[in-house]
Every structure is written in C-alpha cells, then in structure tokens.
Image (cartoon, rainbow, N blue to C red; front, side, top):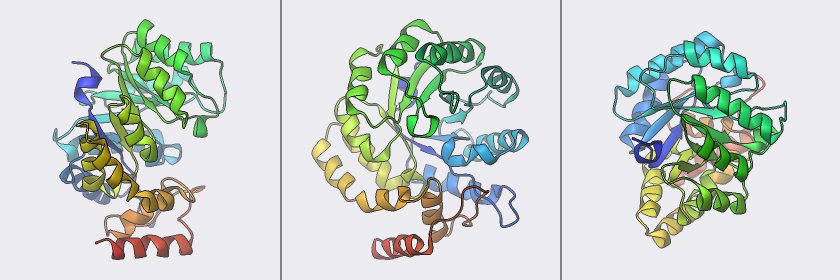
Length: 295
C-alpha cells in the first residue's frame, strides 16, 4: 500500500516537551499525543523540526521514538524524522533507530551544505537504498538554505524506489503545482505550511503535516477533511478564521509559538533548550487572550 493511501489528511509534527531541569518530559508528551489523536488527526510525526531535534542527542531521539510508538499504541500511523546533512551518518541512523513500527521516515533535505540538485538527488537515493521504511522527502528551504526543485522531486519519485512522497514547505505555489502535475499516481504530496494547506489541497495536495494541529487538532483536522472532500468554500471560510493563530504561531519562532499555546492549554511546561527560548511576554499574553476569547 502506498503512502498516498495510508497518509491522507492531517499529520501533526509533535513538539518535544521539556521539564524545568531540561530533561525530556515524557508524561507531557503522552498528554500531547492523546490530545491530538483524540482531536482526530490522521497520523503523527516524531522527531521532526518542531520536535527540536537539533538539541536532542541520539539516545534521546531513540527514547522519544520508542515512547511515541508505545503511547500511540497503533491508534494512528507514526512517521519518524531522520534528516540531516551527513549522508553516511544518516544511513547509520536508519539502521539503528527503532523503525519497526514506523510507517515512513521523514527526511529533511541536507541543510547548510547547500548541495547541488544532483547532490540532493544522490543523497536521497543513498538513504532510500538503505531505509527499511519508505522515505518521505521534506523540502523546507527556509531552514535548509537550499530548495529541492520540482524537477528533482519528480526525478526522485520516478527513478528511486522506496521514496513515497514529499512534505513540500516551499512557499511557491507554482512549484507545488508542478509537483502535482508531474507526480506519479501513488506519490504522496502533503503541505508543510499550515497557512497554504487549503489552497494547495484545492489543486491536488493530499493533506498537511501540521504545527497548528498540536494545539488545535480537532479544528484544524476538520478543516483539512472538509477541503479533501471538495467543500473548499467551507474549508476556506474556517481556514481564514485561524489567521490570528498562524500569526501568533510563527511570529517569533517555531516551536516557541505552538509551545506557548500548549502551555496555556495546560499540556506542557513552557521549556526549551537553547538557542530556542520562549516567546516574548507580549506575544504570550496575546496567545493567552486568544484562547480565553475562543473557548
């Protein structure tokens, strides 16, 4: 069964809660997992960018993945994030990380190195040949410094086995449309940008891997399901009502924005590892007021 069949709808890129002493707060992570699954999201992603993976060591990553599988308990599919800019090290991770229960591996394109498109192609080809699970490409040039072009995405989709889809987080609608026009039939294409998700679904995207769904799982996943059913007018109407949330979420930093919401909802502590810090007091108060006004 293809990823496009398994992963329609809303996936949520889970945060990693921390305690005040800096340790991973597994109890709070369990609360967030229950919250989003009870809210109706179709699948979850552990160890994504929103999970602050650059500040987690390798053992913590494995522990978080294992805990996520245990807490999810087969209620929804789980995707594990394994990405970076050292191809050979990532291949080791693909063999050592707990992936037996994973549906796929989400792999952000190499950051900082700024490889050519051929370098990106060869990187993913190497990962796909070694991965025990299908690879979901992740194009997020705002973080990596290099775009994965539509041509490279389609080349990977057509020429490399074990690559099942892409999380596309480039803000170019033209690039998104090129991917939809040229993709193979079973190639999953999901949005990596909450704000663009409904417009992208309107021309063929299969859903979204979301940040906002950490804090608004029911509201946001309902919007995505409505859009996928073809009721774009209603989905757009509800989507526009979340503009203030999007503004707050990404005004200063992700995941600082969504963690501020989750803190006000009583699910986690508002703790981070440097260099990420909490949102400013002014933004925190805006978030608190929004939640009070929209109960």
